[in-house]
Length: 374
Image (tube, rainbow, N blue to C red; front, top):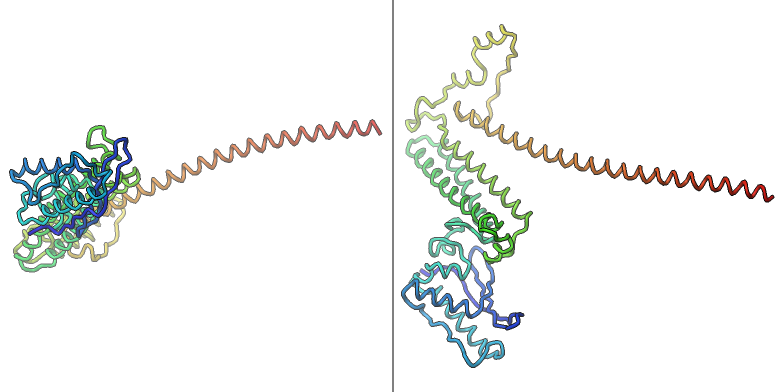
């Protein structure tokens, strides 16, 4: 089955170089995104030769021949004929029932398609890509699917905790585990692609050069930081889901180890503490905490789960402290700048005061002279 990708060459243009040549504007439309590429005839010629070499068979439609006596720059009719021929050439490969040409690396690089399983970018989800995601638009699509996958993982863990039958518990846990493995692969692809777009993963290439090679506009420093924050948040959420998945919940079925179950007595000891422990605390002069109330978040958790929840809350509080520290640091910088501005204003007022005093002395001398004249 041919992929659901529409390819067309609606227009052409002429380059502004010293030796002008014709540029063919290739428009690609799919369920994920639409974008346009600019190629010259030599790019098509290179693609054709590479496909013949890698696939050991010529494409379904031959490539329009090169004209040695006429130039497309000077002939509008020749430009139009070649545009139609190149459009038919690309469409024949895209619509062919034989996927051998679409499976070649040269085809994906020519159309700036992700390094994925053949046809998966257009037939499946953006999350099916393999390797670095180096296109800015596809990067956002994959990140969107990663967030959806993490939500599905959390739902699978919740189904496991609510299930009564051991088989249902096992199926839900297996689904969550598979989703986490896919999420780790997607996160790695996004991280590698972001490093490439930022210029940190490809030698001395700058972010602009990397963005241009990826077929999109270069990303600015602010956008790179924003995407890095999105990746860090997704990584933190994935790690918390992994820990939740590895935590056995309180269930009466045979699907979990009895030693992992938290009985009501264990919960009472966990939250309230034993009477002897309270007596020891009071005898030593220590402070005795009141009994903690059960909440919806802790109702179905055992000791390990409550401990993990506590760690997660502490991490969130640590992150809040870090954010607050940043805000305080910014306020400190603003306070320092205000102080510097006030110091400058005070200096200007001192200079102004001295000028007023000097002018006042001059006026006094002038009045004395006027009095002598009178």
